[in-house]
Amino acid sequence: MIIAILVLAIIVLVLLITKLKLHPFLALLLVSLATGLVMGMKTDALLSAIQTGFGDTLGKIGLVIILGVLIGSFLEHTGAAMVLAKAILSIVGQKRIITAMGVIGYMISIPVFCDSAFILLSTLNKTLSRKAGVSIAATSVALALGLLATHTLVPPTPGPVAAAGILGADLTKVILLGFVIAAAATAAGILFASKIAVKTIIETTEKLVEQNQSKPPSTFKSALPVLVPILLIILKSVSIYFADAGWQSTLKSIFLFTGEPFIALLIGFACCLLLPERIVKKMFAADGWTGKALESAASILFITAAGGVFGKVLQQADAAGELGEALTASSLGLFLPFLLAAILKTAQGSSTVAMITAASVLSPLMASLGFISEWDKAMVVIAVGAGSMVISHVNDSFFWVVTQFTGMNVKTGYKLLSLGTFIVGTVAMIALSIVSFFFR
Image (cartoon, rainbow, N blue to C red; front, side):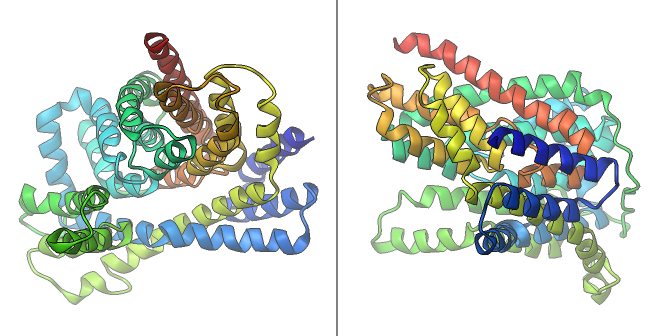
């Protein structure tokens, strides 16, 4: 019954958006409400889930989206995005841009959340694609899948860290395994983007913004709004190892504050003020660069928040939890944590929630399932991470961030991003199965 309700909810959602042309925001809200009622949620719990899902999602990435869009606007209008595009293309070459975006995603998402990283790199990705004459579908999918691989497999992102803590796994072993398995997953994502996604041409009315100044900024200045936030977020991750005394304590407090995605991007936006030849009030007016950027961000904000509502309703209804409990009755080796996390991810949308929930279910069963050694525990964490990639679709905020920032419709999102996450997650699990032979 639970599976039937979930499948029906997703089918109805897709039909509302694709056939009836209902705005995704309204479709997500209506389906979330109907799904909660059909699953037997009490009305007060359902309303609380809707409000919490909307507020939590906006609270986590709302300001990040806004600041990311603002940074993108300044990069475009000043010509800085084109400067960066030329610099990167001179290094990787026009024929290797898809690989470059996948590798960039692999590296950046180790300390940075998928959503934040994709938003931060969105303008650069678009500019590089246009400059190289490559489909934005291919570069966006390569970037998204590279981001997802390390986001779910390599600490210090919260999912693998939390799973390792719950399962008692050694973090160093998880990091070593995660790097290797994430590399295999990213390679599969790049191949998928190069062979399949590249054939899709996204129709968009978005025009490349004309440069508004005669002399573009230097490469160094152009890179600051992108690199500074990333560096600050990395420093925050490193600072947890600092001592809580003396100068290390002071530095730790500074890095913990400036490394928050919102603060880091705010500082990145401040770096944008170095890009124009001269600062004029029009840049910050309602009908200027800032106003137009905020208008474009509004739709993305609402759709992403509504996606969070759908995921929260499914979490509160405990649909994913009941499915997970049923799986524990089987003996599937490392494929058990993989399948458990995959079902949790597909059912409620969040990779982090899927990892934490799967680890919590597995924790009391580790010995009975035969996962005893330190390497066994680390491999279970990686298996859970691989499963948490499968499958990103309409109940996942990352799905909406990627589709809305690239101009994909829902059908194309399923064809490219959803299928791509299935492939990279499956390849990660296959790679882990091969690696596991060396620890037996």
